[in-house]
Image 1 (tube, rainbow, N blue to C red):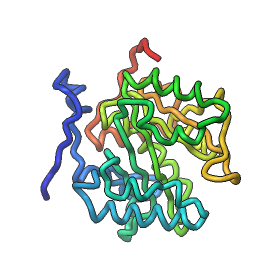
Image 2: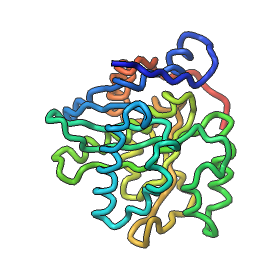
Image 3: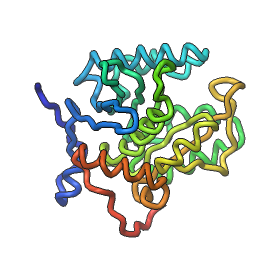
Image 4: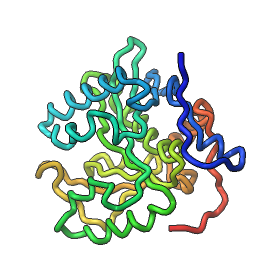
Length: 252
């Protein structure tokens, strides 16, 4: 099988090179809790897998009447997706997925911020994004878990860990996502920190209260739940990533 490599930064120390050059065809790790294999790829490298991801996302979001949140007209071509992750069960069925955009160069690249346009918290959230851009920001979008799988909770946790892995794979410090408030605790377990000073917004409709979440790769050891950090360490080993540098980091 042909292996595609994404070079996402200049050469540096061995640890930096391991992080900045990733194999995206055949890149995978086992989620021990569900028994599913999590596959990582780019849309260009795995168009068939990408089509299955889109189909699963559409079916899941359509069930809840929120398919507009997928912005399929802008994303289906794959050009805006830097990396996507999918969960394949032992029978070969795709049962979960998420895609990642970035690294972002401008605040306006994060179109999810439009949900706060004209609402309380808009200015503060944009300032958060602007302050983190120099350190590298990627964004998780289109997360879904099949309604038919018996491992919804386990796969939800695995997809959340994928968002924690994404900035390390794409040479960024931060991952950003906007999620329904009821999902915030699941993301907190993988190190995702809700921006509690930003007021939630009714997005994609009035049934939901959507909140912004940040993953900071420099803080996983202190922010992730112990069991999830242990899972993350095992997954980094399979992905060929070193454990994050625990030394203090002075930044935002």
